[in-house]
Every structure is written in structure tokens, then in C-alpha cells.
Length: 105
Image (tube, rainbow, N blue to C red; front, side):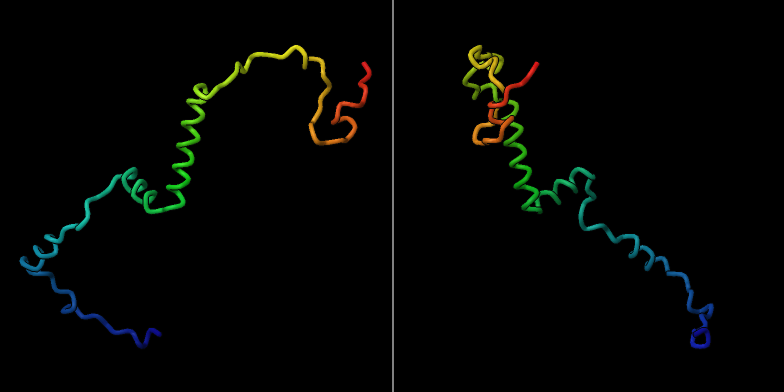
């Protein structure tokens, strides 16, 4: 492989003239530089699934913070009639879960 390598001469490495160098320095970046937050917000807006998820999260946060408006009863109120009932899961008829087994003690 080394036999096929072309040897570079000193004439291949000539410095640029002043006018050519000025043209290289005049090249401007076409787009403005973005901060991390601006770039991440731009990329988030392009992703439809992420935007839908963001809207759902915002709705959930709003409902969580303002849930006291939709409250219909006092969450701390107790019903003394149900205080001494055994543990029970409605719809499941397994002994121990339906409130039929007597607990000793």
C-alpha cells in the first residue's frame, strides 16, 4: 500500500494570498446560534407525540392543582356506620376478601 502513495512536494503547500484569506473569513453562519433551551424547545415542537404528551401532562397538572374546585364532599369526613366492617372487595367472592371469614382476636 505504501508503494502507491503519492509524495507531496513543497509546491503543493502554498500559502493563500491576502484577498483569498479575506474571502474565507467573510463567510458567515446563516442561522443564529441557539441556546440549549431554544434548541430543545424547537425539537420538542417538531415531535408530534411529544407535544401530545406535553398537553396531556399539562392537563393532568392543572386538574391536580385545582381539584379542590371539583370536590363534592369533605375528604376527611367519616361514616361511623361503616367503621367496623371487615375488609371487602366488591365482586370478588373469595373467603377472606368478601368479609365472611371471622377473624379471631
